[in-house]
Length: 65
Image (cartoon, rainbow, N blue to C red; front, side):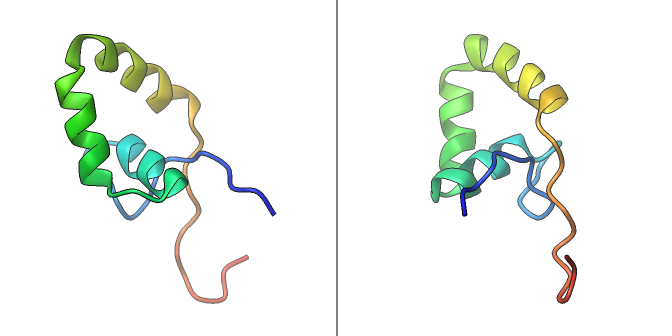
């Protein structure tokens, strides 16, 4: 089964974009946030696009399908 890129419902500071990217690639969401801050002019536009196009991750409740 393949993973899909979704906003995180657990690792979110604003809307969960960096948390979702971190979970997708298996890296720390903090590292993704630092990269977004370093590349601020470009990443601001990318963040806005991703925040509006990425779907939200489902709730992390045991037994939820």
